[in-house]
Length: 143
Image (cartoon, rainbow, N blue to C red; front, side, top):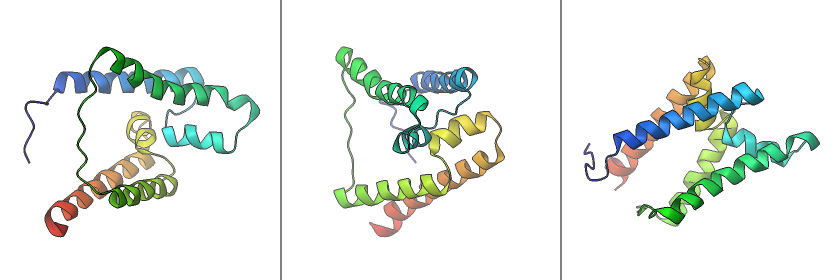
């Protein structure tokens, strides 16, 4: 494995992790809810009257924050080395895994682990192992 030292930003990565952890902790303390994106979005599919506005505000914030940020700085150059069909299949598999695992990576990996949830620990280990296995297979066995 090689680290791209030109784009290696441990300080910014640490800051991002601290901000994500702090935001999820404040969210659960203030609202009693877990800041898992799949649960927040899923709650809009079968909405309760008193439960819609905060979900919409949360999701709009996820869109607004990078939009505002990139008004003041250049967006990173992203290179995706996969075909469209591969990306569609990957997205569907992530969606199925999210439903099967009762939550997404943010819900289990950030919020669940911070609450010392055994279920979230198992889920996080499972999706990390699955991700590593898929990358290994795609890079070393398929190509």
